[in-house]
Length: 114
Length: 114
Image 1 (cartoon, rainbow over the protein chains, first blue to last red):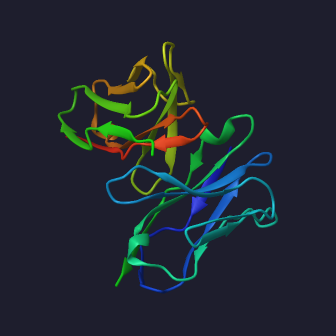
Image 2 (image 1 turned 30 degrees about the horizontal axis):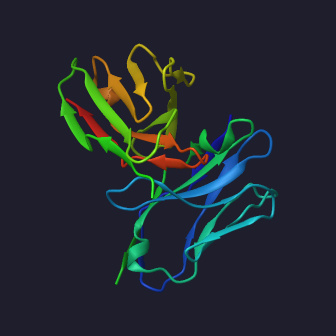
């Protein structure tokens, strides 16, 4: 079946540190890949997405590249801020399920300290 | 932006009782909503797809008689956990599909069954 594995947290960083959250997937076919973020007390929000191999999604300083050869979609940010403290979820979906029947990872809690 | 309100945010109940969780789209109509569940340290898993005016579609392994879903209006879907038991203790999240095919999530409900 389809599944997503992401690195376990929690992750604690200092401001301006480099952040990487690993995500690998298993899927039959060619999935679309997503990163969602959940800030405290809020719902999940789409952070970025990539729909085919070698695509790079980017938003708010975060980037992730769809690597078909390693079945990975690692999330990176070069210099984190306290406001980046949140739970990050890697997810995938497969046609014809559309971009909304998602298979998620377990989430990674990131805390950024000033 | 579009907001999905989910209530309650946490609930504690006795074993054998039923618990209802509400998911409302506040400024848009949602013919389709989704319900997810997350056990500690596990993936966020899709439970069912809720369609306004028709029966919900459940994912494999989810008991439809235990997790009753009602989507009686274009802005409200409810999930009722019937005869809850401690193994039903989990984090439940809803999402709603907006008219522009974007997905909006509630902030989740933590259910603890004693």
